[in-house]
Length: 99
Image 1 (cartoon, rainbow, N blue to C red):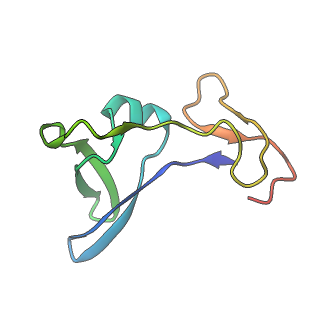
Image 2 (spheres, one colour; image 1 turned 90 degrees about the vertical axis):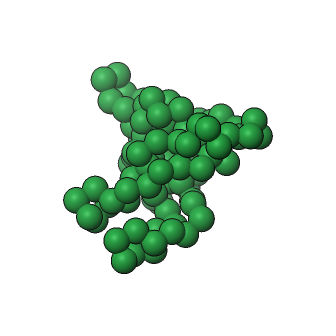
């Protein structure tokens, strides 16, 4: 299955909904937006439904933010993750993986 990174953020009310988790979609999106652990971010809801991070607020960075590292092994079964050419997601290809 696919490994989807999720950002845990300080809960914030957006359009009448409290958002505390936001999908980061995949490693490419994280790299393109230069998202870092500890960033303050601008969050919106796509189609007034799905929350997403528009961008980090770089002007608020303190220098303590950390680059995001992605796992090399499946968090559920421990097998090595693979990235298939021309795809943006990391995948566990263990057919017996409990996830």
